[in-house]
Amino acid sequence: MRAYLFTLLFTLTFLATSAQRTKTGPVLDDYGAVFPVPELDVTIGKNEKLKALFEINRQFDDRDKPNPLIESAARYLNLHAQNNIPTSQQAVVLIIHGGGVYDLLNNDAYRKKYGISNPNAELIAELHDLGVRVVVCGQSAANRNLTKAVALPEVEFALSAMTALVKFQNDQYRLIKF
Image (cartoon, rainbow, N blue to C red):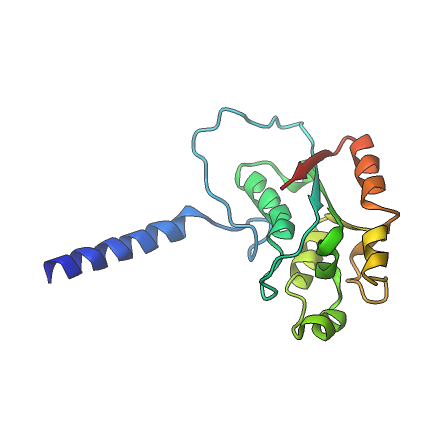
């Protein structure tokens, strides 16, 4: 009985503390949970602009959840906002190519392909509303029959991922590749 109570207490304590370990918001409340880091050695100045370019080139097997690489943009915005860096100091672009382009299908096309609504649609709409640009590789899109007619309305088409990556890096965006 004593061992059972200890295990139960340990489990409840673990669950309570792990729930407090990460939090979402204040930019996106339903996406992008991050860990607090109390003692920072590398900080961002009040006038520094963070221009991030996320390269996303794959889709994940779990079709019921948003692509974690797309959700990285939500984490990026939330973690900086939680540390007093406003979204006005941030600019984010997602460059999506390869298998990742299927995550850009509108709900009808996604349902036709996978039998469910696109779990990325709401996240991409919220990111877009915050000024995040979602750019698809025209070459990958053409290869996978992704057209503007079947893409989410927030998606911008580029000639290629290579072209878009160079263009935004020429505009001083910094590449983040996972």
